[in-house]
Length: 197
Image 1 (cartoon, helix red, strand yellow):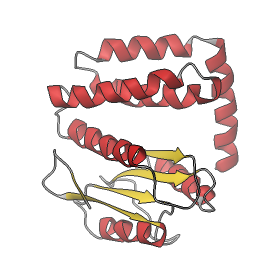
Image 2 (cartoon, rainbow, N blue to C red):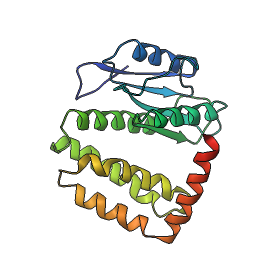
Image 3 (cartoon, rainbow, N blue to C red):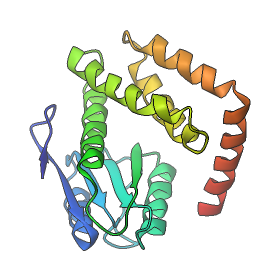
Image 4 (cartoon, rainbow, N blue to C red):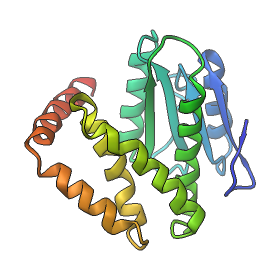
């Protein structure tokens, strides 16, 4: 269980079959803040969030995990429901994620919660956002990870519109979008998304 700084309630996590349990909590408790499912997703095909849910989700899965397709399916379902979410894929199999990925997931939920609470402009929030920018920047120069880095920047840019960081994020997003390499990666990503759907 992860206690989040900005919320007096709790986010929950679990691994494999245990990852489905926090979802059960969340689907039966309207004000449940978020879940970090590791290596598995929804309890069943019928137990999924609804479109107007306030639930935040950051899934984590190993690239060699047998539940990877299931986690991609979760990401697609949440996106279809217009629920903000992130899926982190680490080098490894069906196992608990490395500490770095657990922290990244907790940071994601924390920033999302702060934005929802109107706290995006606080110095502590901006410090977490700077960590996200530092995470994205090296990914932008490595070809295959360019789209991953871009997605991180693009995700936060509108949520921090009225903060001192917005101009920095917006300028970097525009720069990436103008590159030929990004246009190729974007086309490839769109094709993959259609296949997943």
